[in-house]
Length: 127
Image (cartoon, rainbow, N blue to C red; front, side, top):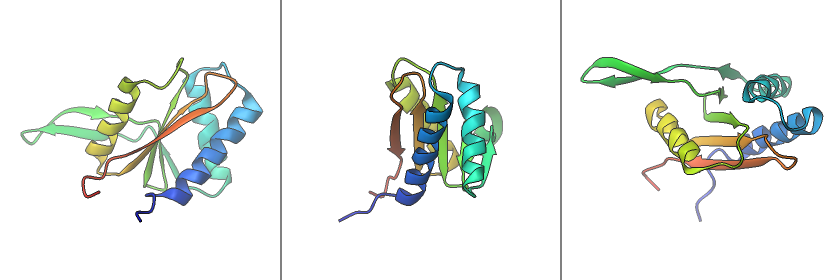
């Protein structure tokens, strides 16, 4: 039986997202939730990097960069959304974040509606 990668950390992050959603409510801009979630995560003792840049290289030259919203404990990428729903484009972007960063676990958290929506994505070729 395989265990979920970063299970405990994901649980803590999602709990913080629920708290932000409970306190602020829904309907604000993505940046509002990104900033509030950063504050909440840090208040629970987690290290959080915001808007960390990951370079994309082609033939040894930097051609672009990915900038995910949050990197928690250096292990889980978090992308905040205020969209009608989480769609394949969001999932594809997260998988690219994971591939470029070398990390394995990402969370997409959608604050748009009265009920918080979230998805956990894993990029682990070994599994």
